[in-house]
Length: 268
Image 1 (cartoon, rainbow, N blue to C red):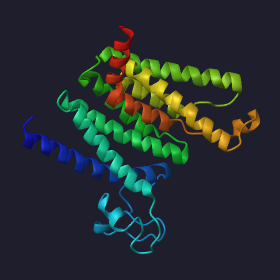
Image 2: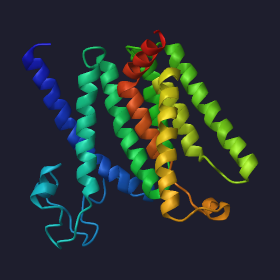
Image 3: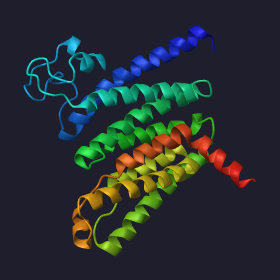
Image 4: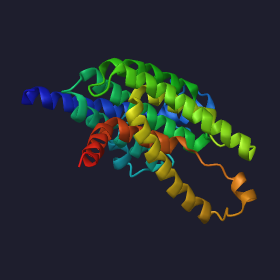
């Protein structure tokens, strides 16, 4: 790519990424409680005052206002800034890793990362994975099967089937043994959709990464909360979708390199 073309692509990706990130904050807040995404306009959750356009500029407005509402001075959650920044960086990463290999797959990676951000924060807040996000990931996964520069359509098809069968099987066995739900239906559908998107090789990597991360983090949280005996452990519920989403993103962006490095070690 020429320098002008490269700079233009990255600038547009960054600007679009941060603007979409601002919209994601609206989605994360409103979708779980059934509010419209268009009405009412963006407003302070404390005083209800509608935000002026210059108070709604992604990243900049938060920094200028020092994380406070201009009208009432109420503190604005740092999450709004973090989501905008994270989405911008993920879109730039999508361009960096995939643009020259497959432009459609770069777009797929950007859309996927945005959806996974929504899924993570909604599950953290509400222990819920809305079906609309799973449908989007499934549609994007179907497209990825044809534009993936690393794995063919058969890998993606097997990934979707393995994701669905494995997570449903784990949930079924856990329920039979413990008599309570261990994996939610949203997690099962999320694994199937992302298995279709990633292919079975990257799916296995992501499940391993999510399991290790969840075991460490949730183990620490359980100990901190004092949930040591079986009865108290059963009363605690922790969202798994954030771990899955982070692992799926890791596998999407770097899975091919990690798998290749691992296989090269085995060849010695």
